[in-house]
Length: 192
Image 1 (cartoon, one colour):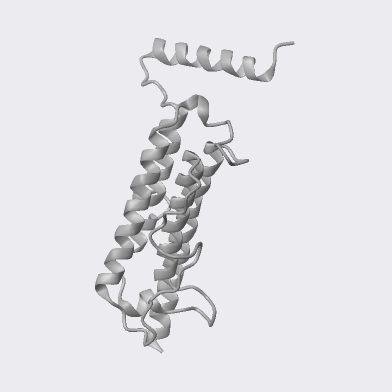
Image 2 (cartoon, rainbow, N blue to C red; image 1 turned 120 degrees about the vertical axis):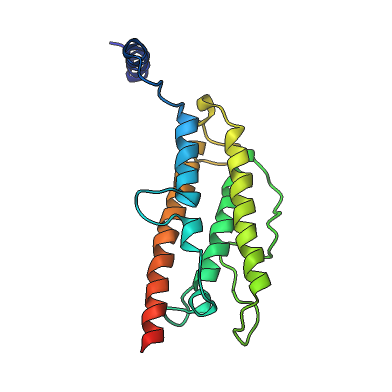
């Protein structure tokens, strides 16, 4: 009995022949597919609503810094958190050991840094640019991969690149939705 993998590989080549005979466009590679998923989650267009970058557009100072409850994260902190995890996945994909994220710490970074809660537009723009740069660097790292590398653990990681890249795309979608919810809650609070 042939292995499941060889049967699926034969099926794939049969499917490609059928596609070609019908004159249909050839399916994209696995890497192209996963890259488009990563881009859709971050910069859209997305069928599910705003992408992560879109959810950060047009925010007021009050929306950016409002917390749903004491000890909860605000939208600004979520944006920097998303930047950090794009950086972390890129590091894992490339097998980098050195910590080079521009901010001290990991995972969550308190924002705004000013204790009196006055937002600095320049600081917000810098953090949005950081998120964009981390996405571009992650995307560049993904582009270095071959389809054959997607299902083998990255150097120094137990997880495969496919799982890590899919995970960071889902992370973007999750936080885009969370940002939309916090934004609406902040607006409701302002109306009271």
